[in-house]
Length: 405
Image (tube, rainbow, N blue to C red; front, side, top):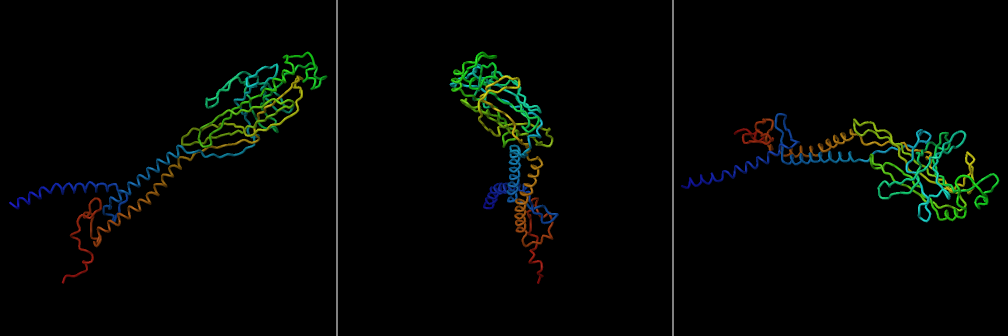
């Protein structure tokens, strides 16, 4: 009876031992993931361990993280910008400027009365015979700022597009200007003085009849002019993002002086390099911003134009190019640099994790074969993970030289 009870007890314990063995074998299956086995002999299976598996997982995670981060940095990377200053004489194409406009306010109310003062938009061209001014004509206009927040209305804009080219020292120099002219009534200008014209002592007149000088002076004392222009540029930390904004100034009318305000435009001639291997060629684009401004005052006087008509100018706003422009190249890191980064990272992580895994596996293998002569062993004595299955038949090395008594 006692023997049967012991046999029954052994049968009851058997499933527990089998399950523990299965659990141990299932954990050991993870050693398949060990990428850095120790190979003691070319004919042996490489020795793998759970520690090597953990290092292999860390290795794969590090490589994956590096690939993801470098791709993200490549896609969202800032452009490599190379700027080169060039003389404006080498820029042989006209630059169209947009958004040039203006309006006169009297007591903060838009004022547009040619019998008092008028705004002219003119295109100037330099030739060997002198400077020729062409009236660009004007019309009412309005526009929104680039953000769509502010609307600029009740403006005067040129009908024809103003453009800029070259510098004053060049024969192809072209610039644009806004001329603000006070209305005057004149007949024979050669026999009158400026004081007589301002006081209105002359009679008669041609063209548009003007209001009396006292009324004009009273209005202009309370008047200001606003001049608007648009600037466009590329964002310095972006590949293609552009920004555009409205730049404007305000100036009052002076009693006895002529105001001349000059805007110098800086031109960026941008060339976009190919980003990927099979990118199409990107054409060059131009952007312009206000580089500098200067202002001067002169004596107010009647002047005659090319056709002999006399004018009383009160303000000039001149738009011209700066003496130098920027030749800009925008480039990204080539895609080959991305591949090189991956290769370098793979080699680095392999050296770190691979060396650590290989040394640990070597240590563990040497521990399990300590005291044994591995030269007399074959691969059948090891399992597929490189673990020694049975070493009971192997005589320890320290006993091999002993002779039987």
